Image 1 (cartoon, rainbow, N blue to C red):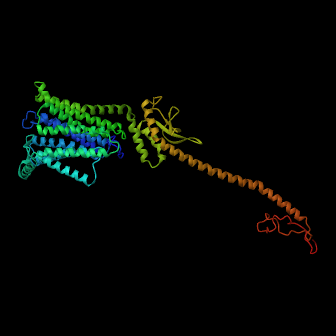
Image 2 (cartoon, rainbow, N blue to C red; image 1 turned 120 degrees about the vertical axis):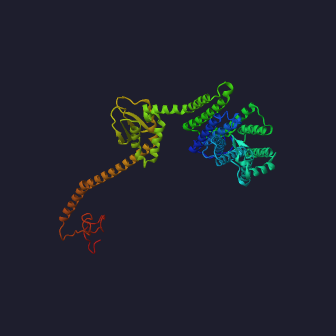
Image 3 (cartoon, one colour; image 1 turned 180 degrees about the vertical axis):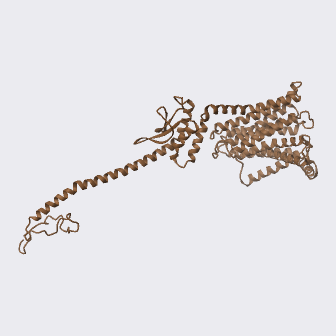
Length: 556
């Protein structure tokens, strides 16, 4: 959702999908093809009648494509981004195909295909133009039966107007219009009789109705501010210029320059509304791709304008050799940036290997860690990355435990000269990575240290988890050993201490009993002590009168 619109949107991952890049890349390629066809047929009066005023079409297609790409980069899969990307591609595709089929003198079937694409692009452009206020202010179309019905009505009218605007044209780029014959011609005649003079007012009514719906939704949205209408201001200017053109039909160069510039700007205004939302920050790669696409679009358009106006400024610039040189200059300009990047990467990879791209190495390690079966593989993966990707002679990982440093993984040979990189997690040092410098180098270079710090930070959580697991297993092992040692000590005490003492006591009691007369007056009322043998009775155990003389019947 654009910023400050008063609602909340669902989060989406940054970065446009690969399909969006492909769509805009195809848009640029078709635009370049159309420019080449146009500039190579400047002397063909049958095909270049409208070329001096075709800036708007080229800029509009690039502006729509860039706007859709920017929106998809901030909100992947957003319907408005998809719509604008598709409209930008169809806008230039229809004109390129018709131009190509005209130059190659293709058959009627190919011309029918070109007209179908052209009318589809016109209908899609009209729908996007009329429906744009409906996305305001929260980036969503109105729902409910009324909203869906109104959108269906806009789609139907867009198809009708797209057919009405192009089916009656005599020729496109010198190719005869196949819709001027048969049933298609009769259908266009009926539409012309029904809509003649009314298209302008119908479009105006739909535009005003769209603005009314946008105003009502803006008024009802929380946190509504007047500054939000700046998103629709370029669109309103371009619609106004379009209505002026349809009524007054101006032919001045200044008007067409203004019309073309606004045509390229107004699609970017909604994209800037999405881009200003700081909830999604684009990564570096996405920003570089968007910048490259923007520069390519400006380069293609600039070449088109320069080649179109160069013959007017230089007397012999319209010759075939001059056009060929201009084409070569365009090719060099297009290939300069990617060639420079490719050569730079090749040189960096030759000298530094994987160290030239530390983020890529760290990302590969993160992917391997996520695919690993458990945290036990983290130390070995860290050593493999340091040795395999960076080309170091050896690496090993140790963790600090209660029993001292413990080696978890090692690969290659590490000696006293190995550099140590602390592995820290949540502010505490949990281990170390020992990296051996290359042969002939006393120390690692700066890029090696940068990459290894990235790798250590990436694998620190997994190694910390593994360290806790190792400490838990060590604690369990120590607990089992302590219990076994205590059991042995108790057994030893019972065997060497209490056992002899009980045996001596038994001997004393047996000696005392042996001194008593066999038939004397004293005799025990119970058997031997209960500890003498297990089966003996213990009914008198613990009684203070266990041994006493027998009493007579008359004694007290």
